[in-house]
Length: 236
Image (cartoon, rainbow, N blue to C red; front, top):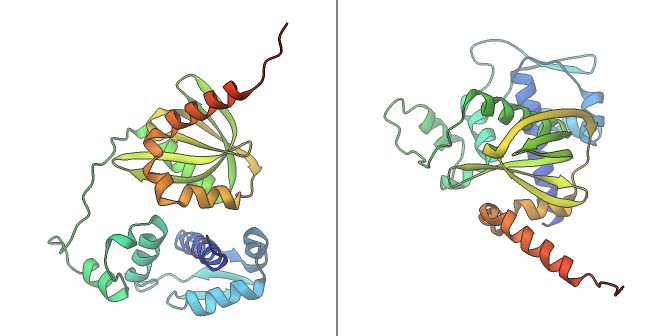
């Protein structure tokens, strides 16, 4: 991934998190946000001034909050932010504010839909999904229990939907790990933060890697077996 693309990805994640917190009613402190995102307060002020100008914000003593009211946020901006962050924007050719507004104003008779098999999720799995999403957003390590196997200190990177299944991708001891969401039985979120490994994040975001997700466990077992066979054995 080129440097410019990495900067755009970080900006998109930063704006998405800021918007979600403001809409949830949080009052944000710019100094604390700057430390959290690893940017300067000046950069955050530019974000608010240039990129979040459509939001009705109030500033006081270095804090920022969203004002209440019927026209607090234009729906098409929120819809665009969600589409871009979730990766579905590419499904709509030329998706912009005008198209987003047209889709939102169409009512029940929507002019276009995206159909794919929806995964069946019980309440327990829905709770696991939400906790993993929060851990990813907060850069918090997690412990998983899957089919009797315990995985500790996993750094969750991204939940990816493919062909009706959700896959959790992450990093464990410097290697990529992949788990099918339906295999996860329990999850515990730790207080330990982590920093994403840029090369691993680039790999996880690659389209070829994503297409191979259903076969990840098989490929990994082949590679592990090959590595074991390459280890020299001493004669007794």
